Length: 347
Image (cartoon, rainbow, N blue to C red; front, top):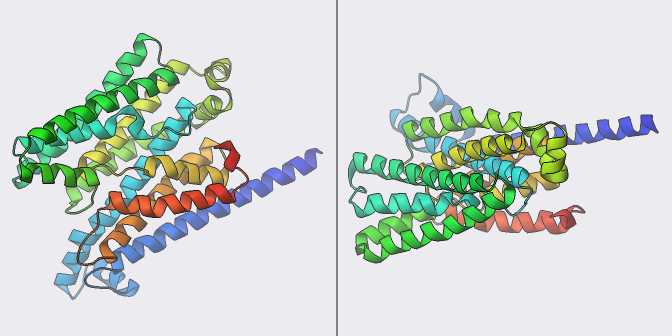
């Protein structure tokens, strides 16, 4: 009996390793395709040559290094960060319908950006940074309000979700009020920001978002066992195993919020990724967060990168915002995995 159990565990371990390896391989292929395809196509070998120090074609090298490469890297960072945050939030709340935006981050960031645009901040480089700063500050303030409200009654999953839902509607109403008084030009800029886009991404922006992800991701991964305890039996099981429930929930929530706020501030609202990518990963490797968190990040990166590449190519030279395309790609994939998996009932 014991030998059979060990054999099944080894088989499951090998399956997970193959799935993770295949996911990383697919991610690399998509990254190469994203760098190669566009108004001006490059072959994979040409991409490697242009990335080299002694590239002959300065114009092509500039296109690759200053336009496509930062866009591709930001797609990877945004997808991985949103999916990782979504998986962590679903684990800590024990609710598979939760996403990073459940905390009200999306409408709060939209409200901050709308205020900045209303003040004329959409003009010039300094105006763009004011929009980013306003969106980030508004998102963080919203998260702090949710945590503060939850702390009044204990930082429970129910209080986090309900507080987030309440502030989501509040900030959505505030954003609608700003749109109501905005001029036609300002309203167009606000609506375009809410679509979610990777247009005009710079290395400076990529660096900031990536730095936040690099700092906060290990925090979430370090709490994988605690998230397993929450998912297995809720607060009671986690507490019985020695995990400080309130502190773990607060730390995980803050880390997920910081990642999401940093990404959304630069890209606008890219919805759906933080909800569906963890589901896809869960259907592939199960609910063990030691595997679920990194695979969810990889699935999210694949989803955003594929959506952005498709948005650039399908109606070229018109670029469809990634926030729109990601839903068209993600929903059929999610439904296919959900309906075709024996684990579908668990969702």
